[in-house]
Length: 178
Image 1 (tube, rainbow, N blue to C red):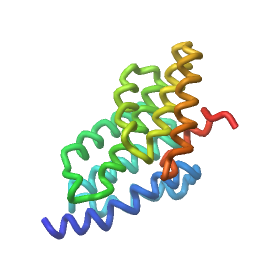
Image 2: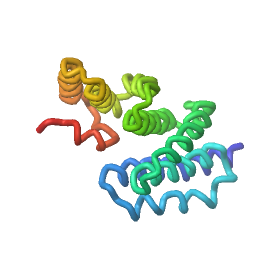
Image 3: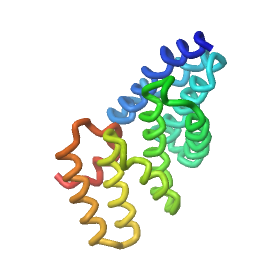
Image 4: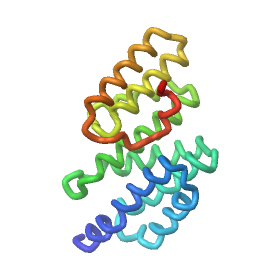
């Protein structure tokens, strides 16, 4: 077990952060390389296996245009990571919340009402709370609720001013008014 935890700590944090960087910067070569970097280590730990699947899902979502496949894979990864203890891996909640953001984005774009479930998970994460408000804004726009959309835009701006950390994902940039 100690060897598996060491492998997980070594193999997990960097690729998880690299997914966020690759998505934010739209860096296809970086995103495409991540699953291959993790694949040799997937048998060492269920967490490394889940992170490998997350890297594949992130590529499918951000670059391959396979949102349905990415969603199915991300749902499994989220459940697998939810079974793990955060005390052993300090970044696990951050990874789970990033997956929740991805699922919310995909489900929102597909018009699934279940997007709200994922958006709610972002409220208590300083790295995702502003994005959660922008996703709520988009949900209101889809429903034709201009007043609600404006409310969540203001909330997102207020949270952004108060935030001590930069938001992980950048796909929400399209929803901001500069």
